[in-house]
Amino acid sequence: MKALAALIATLAPATAFAATTLHEDNSGIFVWVFLGFCALIVVVQVMPAIILMMGFAKGLSAKMAKREVVANK
Image (cartoon, rainbow, N blue to C red):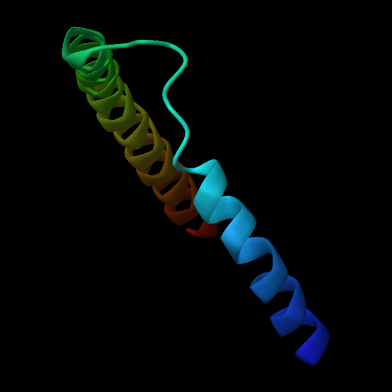
């Protein structure tokens, strides 16, 4: 446990100095707005697909349950 604490204490200053470097991609606010808009489009497209898959699973499970009731009679 002490070895882990020593490792963290050794690496923590190095990561703090590494985080203070400048951005090399020079991306401004418009790039981040564009990427956020793209992420919003992806989320909006995925939501109906998930709802559709849940409907398929619900219908399939109801069909299988009905088939079991008929088979048990």
